[in-house]
Image (cartoon, rainbow, N blue to C red):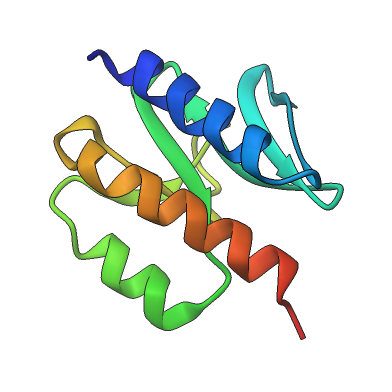
Amino acid sequence: MDARARFDEIADDLVARNPEVELTQMMGMPAIKADGKLIAGFSRGAGAMVFKLPDPALRDQVLALEGAELFDPAGGRPMREWVVVPPPHAGEWQALASEALRLRLHRD
């Protein structure tokens, strides 16, 4: 399965199981919104999913994956809570999307 198809599968699953989740666009890319806020997207340029991970420990753990990096949509100013997870780690995408959703819905 190609990376975009995997994103679509994950996005559709989250929408089907969670009434507060919807599909949208973020900076021109397909994205997932929960409770009115963006939690994940698909970077066409990187061919990878990006996740909002406000938990520093989790973010550091994900950034330790080979090829993962902070999301920098404009080039030059990375978004500190957003991580690009490349296709070699697509097996992690579902769990990361679920965790991004959990972090959004159970924020303090």
